[in-house]
Image 1 (cartoon, one colour):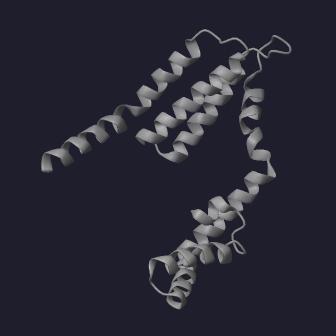
Image 2 (cartoon, rainbow, N blue to C red):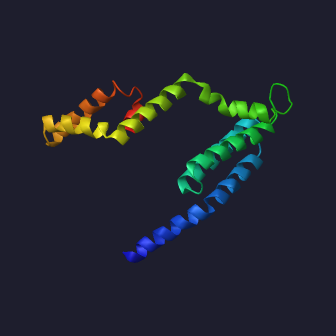
Image 3 (cartoon, rainbow, N blue to C red):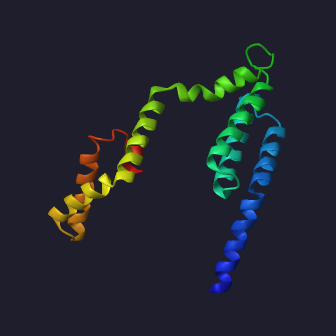
Length: 169
């Protein structure tokens, strides 16, 4: 049993140590692949950045805030130095960064971000646990009543936290 734990720790250490380099290698391979029919160069590079992101996050090779900066830099550079299909000229790094940040200008992003702040505040103050414990203390501890209690908790929390994602968090 001890040997299994040691092997798992060693494997995690390997991926944590070399995950960033693995992600860079996979990104380089995807960027250098021939461009598929119907996919722009910028689109192919964004697929590479997405795969890079997943590998970095899965291996926890770099922290999430640092990975956000690295991903934004990669988007600015890789999209910026790809040809615009409409003009044939390069996008430019300013346009590449603008394309990368375009999704954050949505009102849905603001709604989810604000709801996440509410969810964190409720967790830090313990309000979420208090609501759940009050409901479960009234309903009982049988399995069917716990399910009803979870549904009721979700219903009550929906008045405070509008985003389902944030409510689950």
